[in-house]
Image 1: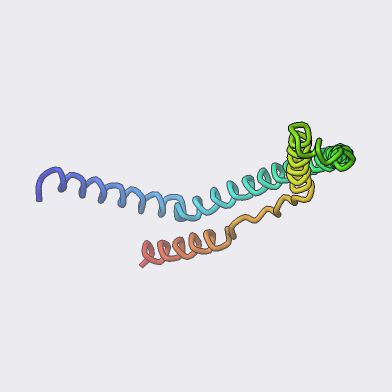
Image 2: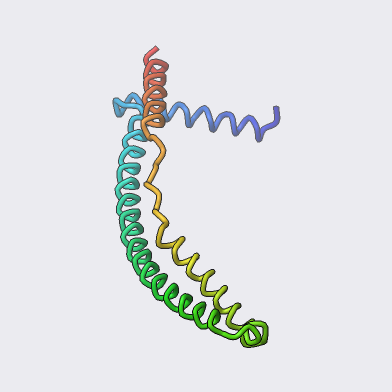
Length: 151
């Protein structure tokens, strides 16, 4: 074993010894403190996530409403264009003007479909992982460390 590895091992032993002294001096394992920090941070995160999700839902509801209104206008224009195209003589329908009208109707229909998709979209519910598993594992680790220190 070279000196560098020996020094690293001695440093780890010192750190573990200091940790044991801290555990005994404080009367509680650092994992309990970590558990509290994790739990508090998680509570804050969940609260902020729920707040942001609600803001997203409200903003998206506004967008959906606007898209629904626009879809109605686009559909009306498309229907008017379709009626104008249908009333064109067949010769005009086959010509450049008819092709342009047909393309415009198709583009309006595509826009209408996209607007309707947005208007019918629902923001999914907020699903967060279960923090109880993490906290339970920290509790188990804390109990194990307490037993190791005492035993």
